[in-house]
Length: 597
Image 1: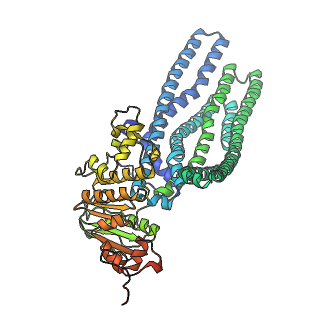
Image 2: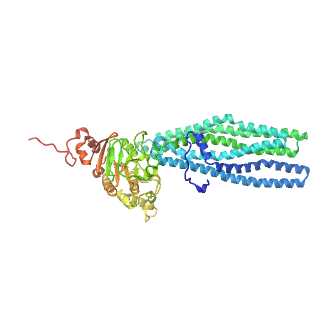
Image 3: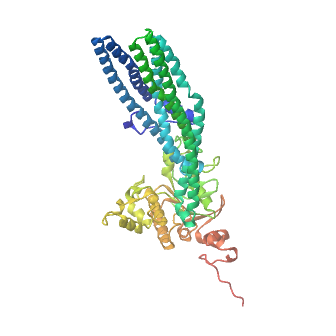
């Protein structure tokens, strides 16, 4: 896989039983890239390992006064330089490709899981952890994947150096062959401690990230209640804990780095002192001593990859564990798509609550508990919060058993707090749709005229098309009511077979709400629409009103019928206390008491 071929057609089905198994799965899916990096790494490393031979030949030729051998040595060094340049250049290209493609694969897997789970993702995993996995953790996983091939190339090169030196000069070569493995293994006892400290540091960072995310998301509310300083103090404490954990972790890696510098230096000093005695005794030539010394000097470079691979694994292991935990989440029932290849049509029925929304009609659902309404909206969209319960049926077909694309085409749920992505208004409304509803009709139905005027005023060019004005992140430059109406317009443009709206007018005034209710009724004529609301203006226009008592349908009728016959309905819709409930007139109002004669 090359970078130009991204994204993957199918990123695969990952092994999420543990973090190491996930890393192993990633490596197996990049065998060709790893082999390519290993090949170029070997060319570069073996070229570096052969440099001492050329240097030693040049020194000895100079000592002997042989110009011919000096020219041969110079030619060998030039050839090795070209080989090293080629190997290092291609190694860098291949390792960066491995890094980016591994990170892209993880990104695609996370995106696929996010689309599959929808709002259930943040119910099962903290939002801060999702952010940490999709940013820093992906980078560290890619780092380990690309470092494996470089480590293997360095290990093979070191083995070749040791074997070559033993053959070239057995006396000094034996010293090097014993010293290099000892240096490589010297840091092994420290790695578990370093890994443990790195895990603690990552956990502290995740907590701080989650706290920062929650604080920023709720900043408007915090300012309203004067709680900014309280949450800022909490973040400062979490940030300081993360700093202390980072310093604690870095100190161990500093010790490992110091050992990786100290021990090769000690080996080099040993070779120089011992080699000098051998040279004085005439047992080795000056050229052989320079060759062995240069080999030990250059061996320090591949030996650094032992420290790097240990660090990469210690950082990527907790990251892979978090990624595997997110990727292990599944829909309660994954549809195979064999039974239903297209989006079904018909009545929407929830067997758990008994709620029925007839096809082609506007059904309003009244829940006294807003949380219960949100859970019902999730169930109607095919995202049940609890497993083991029967799925919502659309035209008799279980939504949970539909292919994901078919389920999304069939039913669209607009959350109580919808999110607007940054971009122009035209881009916001450029969503997969039936094509039957235009953007202008949707904006008109959602009463977005003042939003268009606000966007036109916000544009630098007063004559610019408001549809081309950029909306800031999450629509923060707009009021709550404006954001809600734009989200409603986006849902109306989509024109799904079934549209579920959870409190779509909670942030607007009653006059605007009345016009929105009429616009939705008109635009959704002949299509199935479910509105979860207790607003009389919406309920009045509904073809059918369902009153929920917990998770059970308590009553069904029109708005006026339920006002007359159901005290619980009147309590929710009109906010009456018990002593205010009395007999009703035909239009649902309070009947005047009849005076006795």
